[in-house]
Length: 400
Image 1 (cartoon, rainbow, N blue to C red):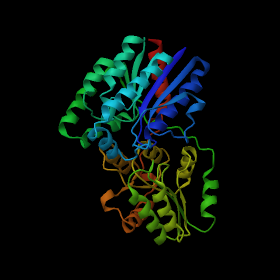
Image 2: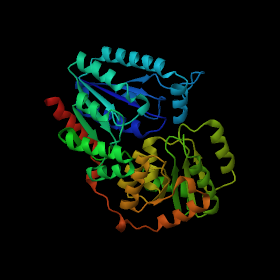
Image 3: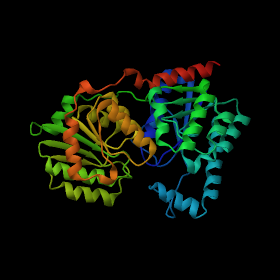
Image 4: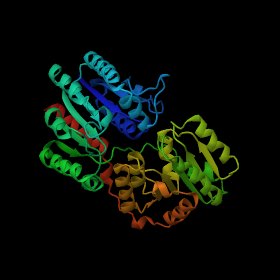
């Protein structure tokens, strides 16, 4: 019996979660009754992803305030745990919980999503967890990450604990990420590429087209013979970049020929959502939603004439796959700026610096992006084989 654990942490966004879910589903559909999967997730339960259909899910102790509520802002997590001295107690609680679940499950493979490349707040726990697993079980340790990043102790962790690393981006994009890092981090990543090349596999994006609703049905639902263009607006999980929603509301007010479908994000606070709803009441050419089911979101994106979004992993992979015209407002992180440039280079996406974003500038960029023709877009089908490529890699590891 193959018994795989997936361990990951998220900050109320879907980038890591959907990637893990897609791989879990793929493994279960391939191996059937020959596999058991345990998912250890740190962060809020995300009910839009039906993990229970394919695996046993446990929520690992994470960052909570004094009322027991999950802290949503990343900086607040540092403030509450590091500055208040609560890190030690939470780390002990977290390690105890993980060890108990591992002892019960007895894994043959342990997969860390994004670790050891990121999550600085929790990454120093890795030696304790992986060392424990390596000494107690005949278990392979594997990394599954959307991209390579620098974190403290990266080289040492890979050398000592990891049997294999799946990087879920096209190989040709990976090297460019170093351009967005400081010199020391870039140099260390270059050494990682060189020294561990035999156990690194670039799989392409983890993405499967799950659309079951036709583009015509989606467009008919929203355009209703009244509007010329369908514009889909999203800011991912909904915890940062409030200006994307506010600027889109302003752009919709000016662009009366287009219909704006706006997804605020599942983690959008109630007070903030009420503010958007109050503004949207006077704008007839839009529909404002707190969140859209991931599968239906793909269908809406496929049907849309243009996307307005940040540069999250899932969004950019889908923009490339559907060759979608886009305006991207990347978050300030290196990974988002890197992916925004990939989208600009390959599908002609327009990029706006989040600090300069305004309704007028957004409307201007929407007009420019709509002029991009598909002939200018350069996308390879091999970029989207992340699920099948990873499954093949895991099968090979099992046979060793």
